Amino acid sequence: MLRILCLVSCALLMPSMADPGALLKLGMEFMNKAVKDAMTESQILEKMAAMASQKQAGVKSIKSMTDMKVKEVTPPIITLDFLPGVGIFQCVSTRITITGKSFMGGTMEIIVVVNITATNRLQQDEATGLPMFQSEGCQIVLVSVKTNLPSKMLPKVVNKFLDSTLKKVLPGMMCPAIDTVLEYVNQKWTHLMDPMPVGEAGSIKYILTGTPTTTASYIEVDFSPVVQREEGDTIALPEDGAAITAPEDYPDGSSQLVLSAAFFTAEFTLLQKYFDVDIKGKTIGKLPPHTTKTLSRFVPRVGKAYRKSLPLMTQIRISKPPKDIMKPGKSQLHLHGTIEMFAIPPKSGPSSMFVLEIRFSLDIQYSLSEDKVHMVTSMNKLLDLSVVSSSIRPFKEKKLKIFLTSLLQEAYVPVINGALEVGFPLPDFLGTKYGQSELAIVENALVVDLRTS
Image 1 (tube, rainbow, N blue to C red):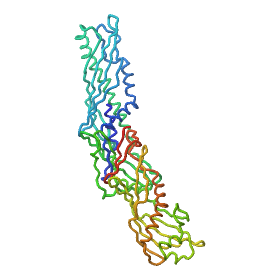
Image 2: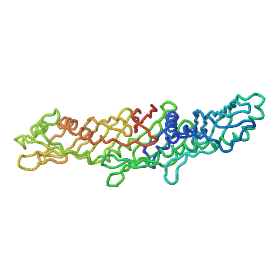
Image 3: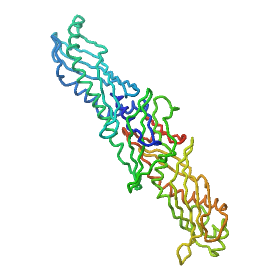
């Protein structure tokens, strides 16, 4: 039954309908921990002990024995195995102590070791679309019996008790425990498809596409997050994104959540409106004053057009959707837009000097909190620069690269990082906390190596 809980965690992260998207590979280590946590939280052992202390319906007395009762059910030993294409097979081994009084006045004790076996079939709830586990074929196998009864009484008395009573009572007492755990597990992913806010920009919703696939080593769950603006329209994941697959170079039993670069591209697009910036003020970090005099060092025509030094305003507009490009060990955010430079006379409005088309890239570093992935960027490279229009006559834009690269790093990158502070929500399943997990950037994807401690 503990293993069942583990299965559940896998299903939580089922991929959605689109490809590329994301996938979850849940191995046995993660599932074992999930089951143990669920056993503790559901208090199933305490409930079983309380049930054992009560008089069991159908328990017949052994001849010459009185006050028969189940005294104790020990914590079970759980063994799980994946059933390819089905779900999980589980074996729960536990010990039951039965006590009573003999006609001689002494205490009689029978210790029975039993194995509970069941198949936990992984299905998809037709009403909610969520994965669910359903137990079937629960069986009780008596492994051993020990007693302090005189040896002459064992063959007839104990065997009759086991055959006529205990074999009938145990399934009714033990098998429901499996169902109880499954019910608890199934409830743990009920919020997976709830929209999760990304600041005030919109939301992310993880839509499951179908029943997870069970292999001999893990459960793979494919899903596609739906990225939606606050206004209601959905941002489609880029169709040119490469399909992702479950990583195979991790130790057996480990678990990974794989998030595609296309998914991050859609999320960055959700925040695109926050990437438009007006840079004003003379003082920007450690840069020279943001004035026409400083600019004239790189564009001499600015000095000729404005003999007196004036403050500048730099207007950056991102005109195309951002794109996240992931290669092994590195990730870059590519931005494409325009930069318009204005001089600001003291007694009139801003005067446009020129408009540049610009493409540049930012390096991205990722980190995790309990329920989100966070990003911090830094300037990588100004990839392309060209003049769209100019009121100060033509000029060579190449000299502006150094000036604009420094300006982007000092004034623009902090704005981007501020917008990214909201973080991107991760799938909510089985109360998973991502803070202890480790990250790796591979081709076209970010891999979250889920840790159990």
